[in-house]
Length: 135
Ligand code: HEM
Image 1 (spheres, protein in one colour):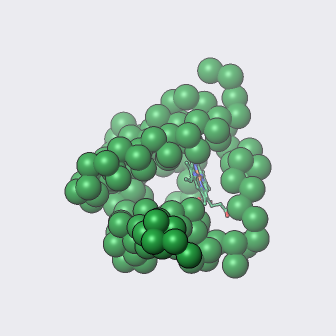
Image 2 (cartoon, helix red, strand yellow):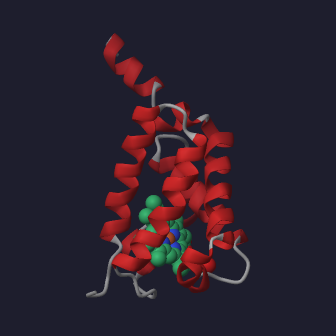
Image 3 (cartoon, rainbow, N blue to C red):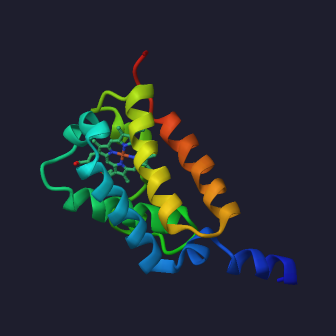
């Protein structure tokens, strides 16, 4: 492996976020905000009463998506994220509410400005791809 390759491998967003504990912290803050912020009430109401299952699944998914252990795939197989979101009606408003929570959580927890902006952009792409209704 070249030196550049080994640098890339070592600097996954997963590691830069603080590994397993950092991913957990991000997911916990994201769902706390979803639970507390009146501006995202419609998004909160799409979710189960307890957010415990959602916290666990998003944490496992993000672990792999950010370049760490593929915990979600090991347990549930291919994420098929868009298909799994089809039962929920998702348009620009729902996407923006989701991003409001994630952007705030990232802003609070990721000091590295470049990483923070990169992650906001990558999350937006996934969130936008989840839209399944015309606005
Ligand atoms: C665009 C707006 C989004 C909305 C409205 C939304 C909504 C939801 C809802 C309602 C659930 C079910 C949770 C429950 O059972 O209580 C869910 C599950 C999930 N969401 Fe989202 N989501 C969005 C975007 C995203 C994004 C951007 C990601 C990843 C970066 C993501 C990852 C997941 C995962 C991993 C699950 C669990 C899937 C499973 O059942 O195994 N979601 N989402």
